[in-house]
Image (cartoon, rainbow, N blue to C red):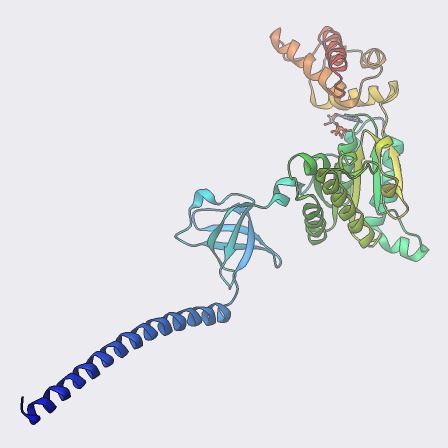
Length: 389
Ligand code: ATP
Protein backbone atom coordinates (compact mmCIF):
# COMPACT_ATOMS: atom_id res chain seq x y z
CA UNK A 1 0.00 0.00 0.00
CA UNK A 2 1.30 3.43 -0.95
CA UNK A 3 1.71 6.06 1.73
CA UNK A 4 -1.07 8.17 0.33
CA UNK A 5 -3.63 5.34 0.22
CA UNK A 6 -2.73 4.37 3.79
CA UNK A 7 -3.44 7.93 4.87
CA UNK A 8 -6.72 7.92 2.97
CA UNK A 9 -7.99 4.80 4.65
CA UNK A 10 -7.06 6.16 8.13
CA UNK A 11 -8.89 9.33 7.26
CA UNK A 12 -11.97 7.37 6.14
CA UNK A 13 -11.94 5.35 9.36
CA UNK A 14 -11.83 8.45 11.49
CA UNK A 15 -14.69 10.01 9.52
CA UNK A 16 -16.77 6.86 10.03
CA UNK A 17 -16.05 7.04 13.75
CA UNK A 18 -17.07 10.66 13.72
CA UNK A 19 -20.33 9.77 11.92
CA UNK A 20 -21.04 6.97 14.40
CA UNK A 21 -20.31 9.35 17.29
CA UNK A 22 -22.62 11.99 15.84
CA UNK A 23 -25.36 9.39 15.24
CA UNK A 24 -25.11 8.35 18.88
CA UNK A 25 -25.26 12.04 19.94
CA UNK A 26 -28.40 12.51 17.80
CA UNK A 27 -29.98 9.46 19.48
CA UNK A 28 -29.00 10.79 22.91
CA UNK A 29 -30.30 14.27 22.17
CA UNK A 30 -33.56 12.79 20.80
CA UNK A 31 -33.99 10.93 24.08
CA UNK A 32 -33.24 14.12 26.03
CA UNK A 33 -35.65 16.05 23.79
CA UNK A 34 -38.42 13.50 24.37
CA UNK A 35 -37.82 13.62 28.10
CA UNK A 36 -37.77 17.43 28.14
CA UNK A 37 -40.97 17.51 26.09
CA UNK A 38 -42.56 15.22 28.63
CA UNK A 39 -41.42 17.54 31.43
CA UNK A 40 -42.67 20.54 29.51
CA UNK A 41 -46.03 18.90 28.99
CA UNK A 42 -46.25 18.05 32.71
CA UNK A 43 -45.33 21.57 33.83
CA UNK A 44 -47.66 23.13 31.30
CA UNK A 45 -50.50 21.01 32.66
CA UNK A 46 -49.55 21.92 36.23
CA UNK A 47 -49.52 25.64 35.31
CA UNK A 48 -52.93 25.18 33.67
CA UNK A 49 -54.23 23.49 36.81
CA UNK A 50 -52.83 26.25 39.00
CA UNK A 51 -54.22 28.98 36.77
CA UNK A 52 -57.66 27.44 36.18
CA UNK A 53 -60.46 28.65 38.47
CA UNK A 54 -61.77 26.04 40.92
CA UNK A 55 -64.91 24.06 40.31
CA UNK A 56 -67.65 24.34 42.89
CA UNK A 57 -68.98 21.36 44.80
CA UNK A 58 -72.75 21.26 45.16
CA UNK A 59 -75.51 18.92 46.28
CA UNK A 60 -78.50 18.33 44.00
CA UNK A 61 -81.76 19.27 45.67
CA UNK A 62 -84.14 18.77 42.78
CA UNK A 63 -83.97 18.05 39.06
CA UNK A 64 -86.36 20.51 37.41
CA UNK A 65 -86.31 19.21 33.84
CA UNK A 66 -83.93 17.75 31.25
CA UNK A 67 -81.70 20.81 31.35
CA UNK A 68 -81.98 22.36 34.78
CA UNK A 69 -81.61 21.45 38.42
CA UNK A 70 -81.68 23.15 41.80
CA UNK A 71 -78.50 22.64 43.78
CA UNK A 72 -77.21 23.69 47.16
CA UNK A 73 -73.71 24.98 46.62
CA UNK A 74 -71.28 24.54 49.45
CA UNK A 75 -70.47 28.24 49.19
CA UNK A 76 -73.89 29.71 49.66
CA UNK A 77 -77.42 29.87 48.43
CA UNK A 78 -79.53 27.43 46.45
CA UNK A 79 -78.92 27.85 42.73
CA UNK A 80 -80.84 26.92 39.62
CA UNK A 81 -78.17 25.61 37.25
CA UNK A 82 -77.90 24.07 33.79
CA UNK A 83 -77.04 20.43 33.27
CA UNK A 84 -74.19 19.96 30.77
CA UNK A 85 -75.12 17.75 27.83
CA UNK A 86 -72.75 14.89 28.69
CA UNK A 87 -74.21 14.34 32.15
CA UNK A 88 -76.19 11.13 32.76
CA UNK A 89 -79.54 12.46 34.03
CA UNK A 90 -80.34 9.18 35.81
CA UNK A 91 -77.44 9.80 38.16
CA UNK A 92 -78.83 13.14 39.28
CA UNK A 93 -80.92 12.57 42.38
CA UNK A 94 -81.55 14.74 45.43
CA UNK A 95 -78.39 14.38 47.49
CA UNK A 96 -76.02 13.56 44.62
CA UNK A 97 -72.79 15.51 44.87
CA UNK A 98 -71.78 17.26 41.66
CA UNK A 99 -69.15 19.70 40.40
CA UNK A 100 -70.28 23.01 38.96
CA UNK A 101 -68.15 24.97 36.52
CA UNK A 102 -66.24 27.84 38.04
CA UNK A 103 -69.01 30.33 37.28
CA UNK A 104 -71.37 28.07 39.17
CA UNK A 105 -73.81 27.99 36.28
CA UNK A 106 -73.62 24.40 35.06
CA UNK A 107 -73.27 20.89 36.40
CA UNK A 108 -70.20 19.55 34.59
CA UNK A 109 -69.53 16.35 36.51
CA UNK A 110 -71.28 13.88 38.80
CA UNK A 111 -68.82 13.14 41.56
CA UNK A 112 -68.63 9.38 41.72
CA UNK A 113 -70.54 7.28 44.21
CA UNK A 114 -71.19 10.03 46.69
CA UNK A 115 -74.45 11.09 48.20
CA UNK A 116 -74.06 13.48 51.03
CA UNK A 117 -74.85 11.45 54.20
CA UNK A 118 -76.03 14.69 55.76
CA UNK A 119 -78.84 14.85 53.21
CA UNK A 120 -79.78 11.23 53.87
CA UNK A 121 -79.66 11.70 57.62
CA UNK A 122 -81.97 14.70 57.74
CA UNK A 123 -85.69 14.95 57.32
CA UNK A 124 -86.48 18.55 56.47
CA UNK A 125 -90.03 19.88 56.58
CA UNK A 126 -90.48 23.48 55.48
CA UNK A 127 -93.83 23.94 57.15
CA UNK A 128 -95.01 21.03 59.30
CA UNK A 129 -98.74 20.48 59.19
CA UNK A 130 -99.09 19.95 62.96
CA UNK A 131 -100.48 22.72 65.14
CA UNK A 132 -100.82 22.85 68.92
CA UNK A 133 -104.56 22.29 68.42
CA UNK A 134 -103.83 18.84 66.98
CA UNK A 135 -102.20 17.71 70.22
CA UNK A 136 -104.38 16.43 73.02
CA UNK A 137 -103.81 16.38 76.77
CA UNK A 138 -100.44 18.17 76.78
CA UNK A 139 -101.47 21.73 77.67
CA UNK A 140 -98.81 22.13 80.36
CA UNK A 141 -96.07 20.89 78.05
CA UNK A 142 -97.27 23.22 75.29
CA UNK A 143 -97.29 26.14 77.69
CA UNK A 144 -93.74 25.41 78.77
CA UNK A 145 -92.53 24.99 75.20
CA UNK A 146 -94.20 28.25 74.34
CA UNK A 147 -92.23 30.06 77.02
CA UNK A 148 -88.85 28.47 76.44
CA UNK A 149 -88.78 28.03 72.66
CA UNK A 150 -91.59 29.86 70.88
CA UNK A 151 -91.35 33.16 72.73
CA UNK A 152 -87.53 33.51 72.51
CA UNK A 153 -87.75 32.81 68.77
CA UNK A 154 -90.59 35.23 68.24
CA UNK A 155 -89.53 37.98 70.62
CA UNK A 156 -85.81 37.74 71.41
CA UNK A 157 -85.72 41.46 72.24
CA UNK A 158 -88.02 40.89 75.17
CA UNK A 159 -85.47 38.51 76.66
CA UNK A 160 -82.60 40.89 75.91
CA UNK A 161 -84.44 43.74 77.59
CA UNK A 162 -85.15 41.77 80.73
CA UNK A 163 -81.68 40.28 80.58
CA UNK A 164 -82.48 36.59 80.85
CA UNK A 165 -81.33 33.73 78.69
CA UNK A 166 -83.75 31.08 77.53
CA UNK A 167 -82.48 27.49 77.35
CA UNK A 168 -80.71 26.55 74.14
CA UNK A 169 -82.05 23.06 74.16
CA UNK A 170 -85.13 21.33 75.46
CA UNK A 171 -85.37 17.64 76.22
CA UNK A 172 -88.70 15.89 75.85
CA UNK A 173 -88.89 12.55 77.56
CA UNK A 174 -91.59 9.99 77.96
CA UNK A 175 -92.91 6.71 76.58
CA UNK A 176 -93.09 6.11 72.82
CA UNK A 177 -96.01 7.51 70.87
CA UNK A 178 -96.98 10.22 73.34
CA UNK A 179 -96.62 13.16 70.97
CA UNK A 180 -93.00 14.32 71.34
CA UNK A 181 -92.42 14.61 67.61
CA UNK A 182 -95.77 16.35 67.21
CA UNK A 183 -94.80 18.91 69.84
CA UNK A 184 -91.53 19.72 68.08
CA UNK A 185 -93.29 20.01 64.72
CA UNK A 186 -95.96 22.29 66.18
CA UNK A 187 -93.26 24.52 67.70
CA UNK A 188 -91.64 24.83 64.26
CA UNK A 189 -94.96 25.66 62.67
CA UNK A 190 -95.83 28.22 65.33
CA UNK A 191 -92.51 30.01 64.82
CA UNK A 192 -92.42 29.67 61.01
CA UNK A 193 -89.20 27.74 61.46
CA UNK A 194 -87.98 24.95 59.24
CA UNK A 195 -88.23 21.56 61.01
CA UNK A 196 -85.10 19.45 60.75
CA UNK A 197 -85.26 15.94 62.22
CA UNK A 198 -82.35 13.60 62.75
CA UNK A 199 -82.56 10.22 64.43
CA UNK A 200 -79.54 9.78 66.68
CA UNK A 201 -79.63 5.99 66.54
CA UNK A 202 -78.98 6.22 62.79
CA UNK A 203 -75.59 7.80 63.49
CA UNK A 204 -74.68 4.61 65.26
CA UNK A 205 -76.34 2.11 62.92
CA UNK A 206 -76.43 3.71 59.48
CA UNK A 207 -73.91 6.50 59.17
CA UNK A 208 -71.01 4.89 60.97
CA UNK A 209 -67.94 7.08 61.07
CA UNK A 210 -69.91 10.09 59.87
CA UNK A 211 -71.76 11.01 63.09
CA UNK A 212 -69.67 13.99 64.16
CA UNK A 213 -69.52 15.39 60.63
CA UNK A 214 -73.27 15.03 60.16
CA UNK A 215 -73.94 16.82 63.45
CA UNK A 216 -71.67 19.68 62.35
CA UNK A 217 -73.29 19.89 58.92
CA UNK A 218 -76.83 19.71 60.31
CA UNK A 219 -76.15 22.68 62.58
CA UNK A 220 -74.52 24.57 59.72
CA UNK A 221 -77.52 23.83 57.52
CA UNK A 222 -79.90 24.93 60.29
CA UNK A 223 -78.04 28.22 60.74
CA UNK A 224 -78.33 28.85 57.02
CA UNK A 225 -82.02 28.03 56.96
CA UNK A 226 -82.85 29.76 60.26
CA UNK A 227 -85.22 30.12 61.95
CA UNK A 228 -84.91 26.40 62.45
CA UNK A 229 -85.84 23.73 64.95
CA UNK A 230 -83.42 20.81 65.07
CA UNK A 231 -85.25 17.79 66.47
CA UNK A 232 -82.93 15.03 67.63
CA UNK A 233 -84.94 11.87 68.15
CA UNK A 234 -83.68 8.95 70.26
CA UNK A 235 -80.87 11.07 71.66
CA UNK A 236 -80.01 8.32 74.16
CA UNK A 237 -78.34 6.46 71.25
CA UNK A 238 -75.47 8.96 71.34
CA UNK A 239 -76.06 10.61 74.68
CA UNK A 240 -75.91 7.67 77.03
CA UNK A 241 -73.85 7.86 80.19
CA UNK A 242 -70.23 7.37 79.27
CA UNK A 243 -69.23 3.77 79.31
CA UNK A 244 -65.70 2.42 79.16
CA UNK A 245 -64.53 3.54 75.75
CA UNK A 246 -63.48 0.07 74.77
CA UNK A 247 -64.41 -0.33 71.14
CA UNK A 248 -63.94 2.03 68.26
CA UNK A 249 -67.75 2.11 67.98
CA UNK A 250 -67.94 3.57 71.51
CA UNK A 251 -65.33 6.16 70.63
CA UNK A 252 -67.26 7.08 67.51
CA UNK A 253 -70.45 7.58 69.55
CA UNK A 254 -68.43 9.65 71.99
CA UNK A 255 -67.08 11.84 69.19
CA UNK A 256 -70.61 12.42 67.88
CA UNK A 257 -71.80 13.42 71.34
CA UNK A 258 -68.85 15.77 71.85
CA UNK A 259 -69.56 17.42 68.51
CA UNK A 260 -73.19 17.88 69.54
CA UNK A 261 -72.14 19.45 72.84
CA UNK A 262 -69.68 21.73 71.04
CA UNK A 263 -72.37 22.88 68.63
CA UNK A 264 -74.81 23.63 71.44
CA UNK A 265 -72.15 25.37 73.51
CA UNK A 266 -71.19 27.43 70.47
CA UNK A 267 -74.45 29.15 69.78
CA UNK A 268 -76.20 32.10 71.29
CA UNK A 269 -79.30 31.24 73.38
CA UNK A 270 -81.16 33.99 71.53
CA UNK A 271 -80.17 32.79 68.08
CA UNK A 272 -82.89 31.56 65.79
CA UNK A 273 -81.87 27.91 65.91
CA UNK A 274 -83.31 25.79 68.71
CA UNK A 275 -82.65 22.20 69.57
CA UNK A 276 -85.35 19.89 70.83
CA UNK A 277 -84.28 16.36 71.69
CA UNK A 278 -86.43 13.39 72.60
CA UNK A 279 -85.84 10.16 74.47
CA UNK A 280 -87.74 7.29 76.01
CA UNK A 281 -84.79 6.58 78.30
CA UNK A 282 -83.87 9.68 80.26
CA UNK A 283 -82.36 7.42 82.92
CA UNK A 284 -79.56 6.53 80.48
CA UNK A 285 -78.54 10.06 79.58
CA UNK A 286 -75.09 11.47 80.22
CA UNK A 287 -75.35 14.31 82.79
CA UNK A 288 -73.07 16.37 80.50
CA UNK A 289 -76.06 16.78 78.18
CA UNK A 290 -78.28 18.11 80.92
CA UNK A 291 -75.86 20.72 82.22
CA UNK A 292 -76.95 24.40 82.24
CA UNK A 293 -76.68 25.93 78.80
CA UNK A 294 -77.39 22.62 77.11
CA UNK A 295 -80.58 20.61 77.47
CA UNK A 296 -81.34 22.32 80.73
CA UNK A 297 -85.09 22.34 80.30
CA UNK A 298 -86.53 18.90 80.71
CA UNK A 299 -90.17 18.38 79.86
CA UNK A 300 -91.92 15.13 80.63
CA UNK A 301 -94.42 13.89 78.08
CA UNK A 302 -96.23 11.12 79.94
CA UNK A 303 -98.91 8.69 78.85
CA UNK A 304 -102.22 10.55 78.71
CA UNK A 305 -104.65 10.32 81.62
CA UNK A 306 -108.36 9.77 80.98
CA UNK A 307 -109.00 13.41 80.15
CA UNK A 308 -105.98 13.44 77.84
CA UNK A 309 -107.15 10.27 76.10
CA UNK A 310 -110.59 11.79 75.55
CA UNK A 311 -109.03 14.87 74.03
CA UNK A 312 -106.84 12.81 71.74
CA UNK A 313 -109.86 10.73 70.67
CA UNK A 314 -111.78 13.91 69.90
CA UNK A 315 -108.88 15.17 67.81
CA UNK A 316 -108.70 11.87 65.94
CA UNK A 317 -112.48 12.03 65.41
CA UNK A 318 -112.02 15.28 63.54
CA UNK A 319 -110.54 13.44 60.59
CA UNK A 320 -111.98 9.92 60.98
CA UNK A 321 -115.72 9.49 60.30
CA UNK A 322 -116.99 8.37 63.66
CA UNK A 323 -120.74 8.04 64.28
CA UNK A 324 -122.14 10.59 66.74
CA UNK A 325 -123.46 7.80 69.00
CA UNK A 326 -119.91 6.56 69.75
CA UNK A 327 -119.27 7.23 73.43
CA UNK A 328 -115.71 8.57 73.31
CA UNK A 329 -115.79 9.14 77.06
CA UNK A 330 -116.31 5.40 77.58
CA UNK A 331 -113.57 4.56 75.08
CA UNK A 332 -111.23 6.91 76.98
CA UNK A 333 -112.10 5.05 80.19
CA UNK A 334 -111.31 1.58 78.85
CA UNK A 335 -108.03 2.55 77.18
CA UNK A 336 -106.07 3.22 80.36
CA UNK A 337 -102.31 2.96 79.70
CA UNK A 338 -102.56 3.58 75.97
CA UNK A 339 -100.44 6.25 74.26
CA UNK A 340 -101.69 8.69 71.64
CA UNK A 341 -100.17 6.53 68.94
CA UNK A 342 -102.04 3.50 70.31
CA UNK A 343 -105.32 5.46 70.36
CA UNK A 344 -104.65 6.36 66.76
CA UNK A 345 -104.19 2.63 66.06
CA UNK A 346 -107.61 1.99 67.72
CA UNK A 347 -109.34 4.47 65.40
CA UNK A 348 -107.53 3.04 62.36
CA UNK A 349 -108.53 -0.53 63.31
CA UNK A 350 -112.12 0.61 63.86
CA UNK A 351 -112.03 2.11 60.38
CA UNK A 352 -110.99 -1.28 58.98
CA UNK A 353 -113.88 -2.99 60.79
CA UNK A 354 -116.26 -0.47 59.19
CA UNK A 355 -114.79 -1.04 55.72
CA UNK A 356 -115.05 -4.82 56.15
CA UNK A 357 -118.74 -4.40 56.97
CA UNK A 358 -119.24 -2.20 53.93
CA UNK A 359 -119.94 0.87 56.02
CA UNK A 360 -118.50 4.33 55.54
CA UNK A 361 -118.87 5.34 59.18
CA UNK A 362 -117.28 3.95 62.35
CA UNK A 363 -119.74 2.64 64.97
CA UNK A 364 -119.40 1.99 68.72
CA UNK A 365 -119.05 -1.75 68.05
CA UNK A 366 -116.18 -1.08 65.63
CA UNK A 367 -114.46 0.98 68.32
CA UNK A 368 -114.96 -1.66 71.02
CA UNK A 369 -113.63 -4.43 68.76
CA UNK A 370 -110.70 -2.23 67.83
CA UNK A 371 -109.83 -1.52 71.49
CA UNK A 372 -109.74 -5.28 72.14
CA UNK A 373 -107.57 -5.90 69.10
CA UNK A 374 -105.09 -3.15 69.92
CA UNK A 375 -104.88 -4.30 73.57
CA UNK A 376 -104.05 -7.81 72.37
CA UNK A 377 -101.44 -6.42 70.01
CA UNK A 378 -99.86 -4.40 72.82
CA UNK A 379 -99.75 -7.51 75.05
CA UNK A 380 -98.16 -9.57 72.28
CA UNK A 381 -95.52 -6.91 71.70
CA UNK A 382 -94.83 -6.66 75.42
CA UNK A 383 -94.27 -10.42 75.54
CA UNK A 384 -91.70 -9.97 72.78
CA UNK A 385 -90.05 -7.21 74.78
CA UNK A 386 -91.07 -4.53 72.27
CA UNK A 387 -92.50 -1.28 73.55
CA UNK A 388 -94.25 0.91 71.04
CA UNK A 389 -97.05 -0.18 68.77
P1 ATP B 1 -91.61 8.11 69.60
O1 ATP B 1 -91.03 8.25 70.96
O2 ATP B 1 -91.99 6.69 69.28
O3 ATP B 1 -90.85 8.79 68.51
P2 ATP B 1 -93.46 10.30 69.84
O4 ATP B 1 -93.67 10.57 71.29
O5 ATP B 1 -92.58 11.20 69.09
O6 ATP B 1 -93.07 8.81 69.63
P3 ATP B 1 -95.41 11.04 67.90
O7 ATP B 1 -94.62 10.55 66.73
O8 ATP B 1 -95.47 12.49 68.13
O9 ATP B 1 -94.91 10.30 69.20
O10 ATP B 1 -96.89 10.45 67.81
C1 ATP B 1 -97.23 9.39 66.96
C2 ATP B 1 -98.66 9.56 66.51
O11 ATP B 1 -99.54 9.33 67.63
C3 ATP B 1 -98.99 10.95 66.02
O12 ATP B 1 -98.82 11.06 64.64
C4 ATP B 1 -100.43 11.15 66.45
O13 ATP B 1 -101.30 10.63 65.47
C5 ATP B 1 -100.59 10.29 67.67
N1 ATP B 1 -100.45 11.03 68.94
C6 ATP B 1 -99.55 10.78 69.91
N2 ATP B 1 -99.70 11.61 70.94
C7 ATP B 1 -100.71 12.43 70.62
C8 ATP B 1 -101.33 13.52 71.28
N3 ATP B 1 -100.96 13.91 72.51
N4 ATP B 1 -102.35 14.16 70.66
C9 ATP B 1 -102.76 13.77 69.43
N5 ATP B 1 -102.21 12.73 68.76
C10 ATP B 1 -101.22 12.06 69.34
